[in-house]
Length: 97
Image (cartoon, rainbow, N blue to C red):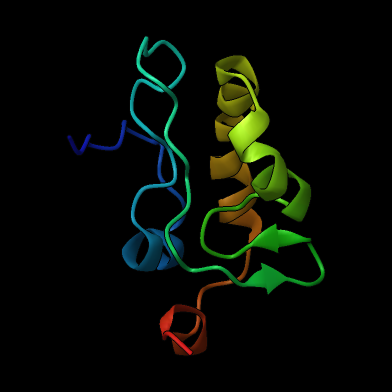
């Protein structure tokens, strides 16, 4: 079931339009399994080391399947700030290769 983003919980408008919401509404208190923030836009921003689609580091992406829910919530908590700091997405970022 899709969930609406929480107020103020999305990335800047350039990222939000291409990637959808970065913050999973209720992820901090949700008793359900914590979903992946992946938006299937898997490109790393070299200077920051963050994925331009979801804002995670390569280490966070690699460890996602073994993180417990608290660890996943900790990653979710920093994603809006990271996504806001990334440069705007280009068409190359969102066009499948």
